[in-house]
Image (cartoon, rainbow, N blue to C red):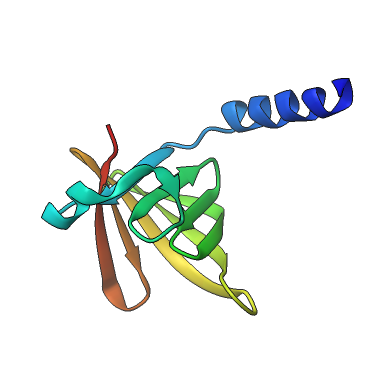
Length: 118
């Protein structure tokens, strides 16, 4: 029991120490996002979670690596290794701060505007 508790405390402190600039829970920044559940992570109409270097979305988990600050844009470009069902795939992901959340720009210029959950 003590060992398990120690592992949990170690994991929590590691996440806190390695906190990233975009850490938080997000939902779409449009009217349909109002009905999303900010407590459920990675489920249909559940929140998107960024924590340290991990990006969790519906059925997908991406590890964000090699961060490069994008000068003058308040953003960071990452090499991402993503996994859903099956083999992992690689992509570049740009995450930018916005007034009420973030913009996530991926392959082909696909832009997701996400607002921070309250």
